Image (tube, rainbow, N blue to C red; front, side):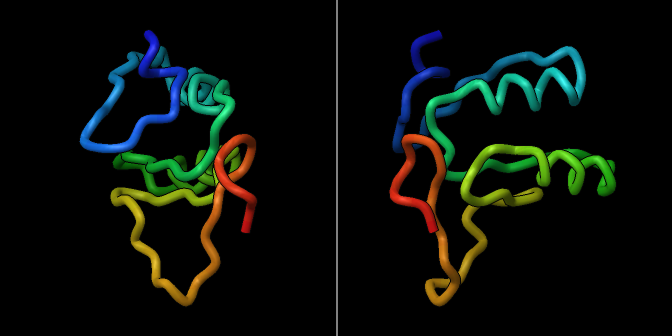
Length: 83
């Protein structure tokens, strides 16, 4: 799916089905980009584990861009200049 491999801005979402959490992590990290990501799960321990393994500049749990302008924020890979 083209939208899954490109950097998009706006109200767009690519819905991909993963077999399990490990497969979801593999899909998420198989990207040239890494600005931010969000983890949604009822399992808080799993959310923290996945957050530590995602290759993105910022990781949010059950939300997106819950940040403060005084806090550093940036991407990895082809998403920005880092933090």
